[in-house]
Picture 1 (cartoon, rainbow, N blue to C red):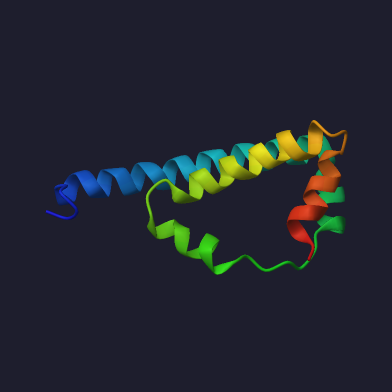
Picture 2 (picture 1 turned 90 degrees about the horizontal axis):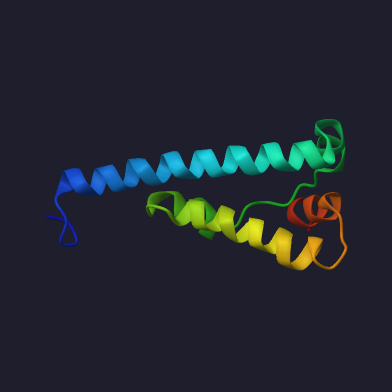
Amino acid sequence: MIAGMNEQDLMAYIIFGVILNFAFSILFGMYLSKNIGMQEMITSKGEKPQSLLISMSLFVPFAKMLITLYRVAILQIYFLNKGHSHKEFWVYMTNK
């Protein structure tokens, strides 16, 4: 038992979390590319490195998915509700 869970259950949670992460990330990427345009995303992408917390979150089930949902919330609450565009969000996320 690991953390009060059988090994099979823990692996099932991890695999399900990774699958949900990829699903939400792909859907969010498709949403942004639809609203910004793929060519515009490529030309305006910055060189901002990912933080260590985001890289390490892949080892915690559902953490990466929650980070993606947090980014969606930032897009909706901070950018779109205040009249900013999807492109401004992309520049914010990818530039220092």
